[in-house]
Image 1 (cartoon, one colour):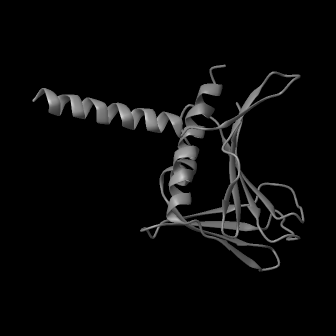
Image 2 (cartoon, rainbow, N blue to C red):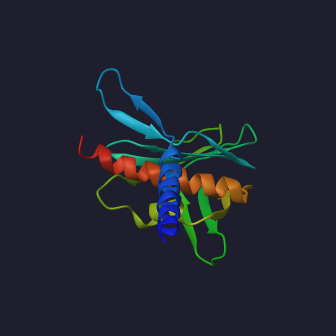
Length: 167
């Protein structure tokens, strides 16, 4: 009986230490204002990259389309499809017009997590479909490993973002 309890305790301890190590975020401090921001860093997926940044005021989800010289404006739409579900989220580009293929979706950072941001961080993303104002479509499709890494880092970033509110 003692061995079983020891094994269970050891197993739980390993699980908690493994999840603590997975929370590898990039911490930045502004040299003038001393404000702190956290970032997941670039998650490179087939078709593009995604980044999640948190500051005291907002959480910025940035998508970078992988194939150069793509112009996007505020008419560009972002549809997120989740694995094993019919549910999808739809956003509009909230960033500035650019020809670098950069799209932004902003969420207010607060003590409670926005519903859409919560879904982005907890459900496995099957595909992100971006449609530009010129009706060109681009697809970003992560594999299972990339989805798991995204869920861990996004969840961790949201938690750290909430900690920024008390600083």
